[in-house]
Amino acid sequence: MQTVLVTGASGGIGTRLRKLMKGLYPDIRWSDLTPPAGLSPDERFIKADLAVMDEVERAVQGVQGIVHLGGFSVEGPWATILNANIIGCYNLFEAARRAKVERIVFASSNHAVGFYPRQHTIGIDAPVRPDSRYGVSKAFGEALAALYAYKHGLRVTSIRIGNVADAPVDKRRLSIWIAPQDLVQLIRIGLEHPDIRCEIFYGASDNARAWWDNSTAFRFGYRPQARAEDHAAEALAADAKLPADRIDEWYQGGPFCSDEFDGGIKRSPV
Ligand code: 15L
Image 1 (cartoon, helix red, strand yellow):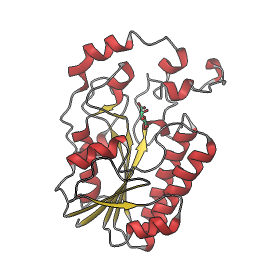
Image 2 (cartoon, rainbow, N blue to C red):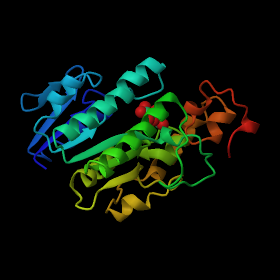
Image 3 (tube, protein in one colour):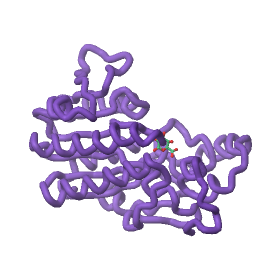
Image 4 (cartoon, protein in one colour):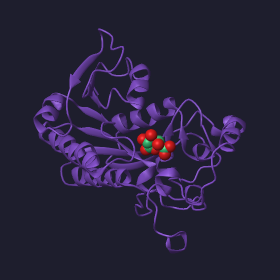
């Protein structure tokens, strides 16, 4: 892997990756709508609006691998999700195919499956249950990944990222937290492992309270180093200060499920 493009370079995860991926690949191109803060002279930036195919095509030229973090990273109005995450993701995969990019690591999200109750442990074979328009866009990205892998031969890994932070900040995050270094480990598997075809991993650290069966990632050699339980006391203390919310606390997607919820808890799937 000589040249790697990372989209969404100016966002929260991109900013962390710029430090952690330094020197991992000979040529890393960082892309976004605006340059990341503190870009150093040895870092290469390419401006690209994901919703504009010409700009995406320019960004992927000569690249072997892409880490696609770009797009809108929370729930938003339909027009925003449509442009940034649906059209943007299509443009990225299609431009990658045209430019003969070998591999894509797609930043999917736990919100593609957010409407599973917390009492369920789900693997990657559970049907998607998005909890938001944002979650739908991540399920769409996973579907694009399968199309471009099986029809066009790209090697694609979708990582259903939980929550990237230095430590889990509340009870829900104790189950879904991923430390930045563990995320880098998963990304490297996606970019380098010889047997990748079309995989889905859960982006979670070694979390004793996990709701996800991450055995596929473990089979590819993932060995998370960070343990959520080491931060349990602080996370539970912070959680005690949050307002009680039945929907939020029932489902894995938390506030993304309770936001705009008018389905009636009794009629909702368990
Ligand atoms: C996500 O997918 C978001 O990008 C992030 O901002 C967090 O809200 C995270 O999920 C989460 O579920 O905590």
